[in-house]
Picture 1: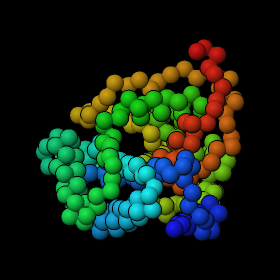
Picture 2 (picture 1 turned 90 degrees about the vertical axis):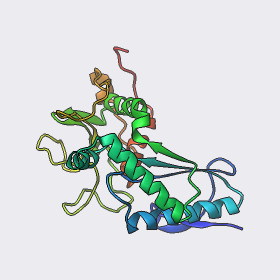
Picture 3 (picture 1 turned 180 degrees about the vertical axis):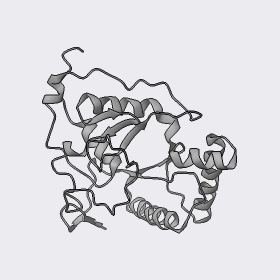
Picture 4 (picture 1 turned 120 degrees about the horizontal axis):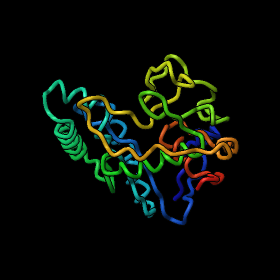
Length: 239
């Protein structure tokens, strides 16, 4: 039995074939846990649950990872409104979300990964983006520079972020190089949670002038970052 999937890049249905034998890795962006789940969450995760269960029915070995954003401006703001800590709020709504998924029989996820459990890994990725010139710092944090992707918008068949777009992590800041640049790491404000800042590094002109320009642009920010991080780049002459 075969499976065909719609390829957004080619705009065609294509035969599904894993990259490595019968192993399939799937990542689906999970919720930001600052409020109760809604019908949009249910629709998304029930759909992917069905896909994973069908792939397993076809005897594919699927590893399904879903993240949980448990630190975010929305979480901090809501926690202050409720006069509780951000962690208390995040854990409360994370628990509610998981209960909702259980009620919907969404049982195929192998691992729910909290963002706060991978701070060091996140910082490491951002450092590599800075080294390669894909990210820059302004007063309120580090941002991803979308102009470094010459094929930006390839999947969506466009070349710019529209004014009507609702894209996460895009903050209004006049210091940004481009309107669509999204935040990778925010500088903490007073009374906000902080982590040891190990992101700041020295970047040589050699690296900056030898940036890889032929990067593949996907329509999800996480894949934008991963594609950039995993491409080869020149060594820092000071390393």
